Length: 485
Image 1 (cartoon, helix red, strand yellow):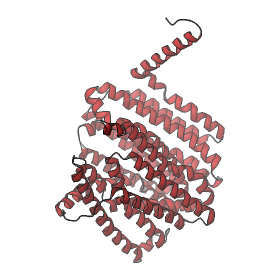
Image 2: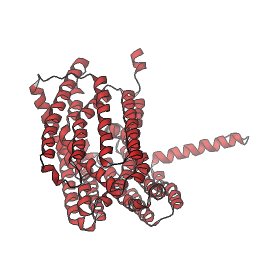
Image 3: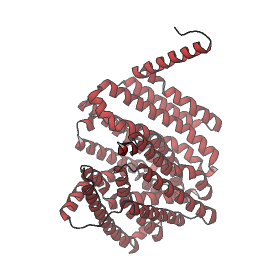
Image 4: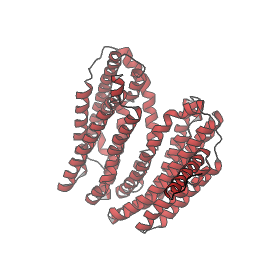
């Protein structure tokens, strides 16, 4: 009983992880005005392109072995066996990362890497160091979460974020350059991995070769899935860079950060709803599942609309005039981010029927359409790339909805979908034309309220609103000296 009292509740753990996520991801947005005042758009474009190279390299180097940790360690109940398997996967991650990093290091420094005209060998090597450590860090933090060490996770996240911010501020105030900012990332990664190794105390073990093969067989399809996802969430940077210039890519990089902020704000709802949606479908029925899903769509839309106006006001108010294009681009990036979040929310039937192969083919098709459209529309510049992403993400959302409905029909209100989409499009068009900061801030409050209007049609919401109204009337009656009826 004492141990159970000492264990934090799942809600506390979820909130702690959420705080860590907001701090680590939100730091980039907080630092944005400072970085924009010290770096030119072309430098931010280079940083973003190098970060994209690091992301795709990290997907390959990590080999999705942190997913193997969830699969093979999660099913064990004995702690010693769990720790042994975790140490095996940790050892395999180190070996795979070292081998692939050595191959890529040879490629970069042999002269073949000189084809990356926008980056020096030193910058590419710094990115490679971060990517090669990504797998070990991801696996180590996953092990912390599996042990419910939420506060340890939070402490490492906060310490790493503060260290990186301090280092970047030091670089910006002294002699700002892309190379030195990348060095700040390397130092932060080394600090993070050192702290995690001291806390987790994994043992290097290479005796169970058959288990290694099993872990790799499990990891490589997930690694390919990650590469497919990168096609619509990262690869567009290369199209923007090569069809326009690094200045425009820097503007796009600023815009996409606000879309990421919207996605981060969606995550608390996802963290609450995603684990329980199938249980709700089984035990409370389809109507309850539809109600929550439709509330989720309203929530995503109001966030998107609110961020659209707030982001434009922020860029106009806080960033130099050289970044004014970002205030326009953010409206396009928010549109395809909205489609992406809605597709994930509507993906109930496919996952409920465990049709994972269908899910893979939908992702592959959407990525191929996106890459093809980006190539075809690259002549229209950055807006052509954004348009291609909107088409691909809209295609994915529609196809996911159709097949999910075929596998598990849910009685959604199509009128609600159309209302939310129309409000979204009209709001984005309005934000495109507004240039007054204070008007943007005012609409940032009003427009989300309009998005919430269909929520009153949902029975549970209407019942709660009516109950709240009765309580309020009762309290007002008591304050006025009258007894409630």
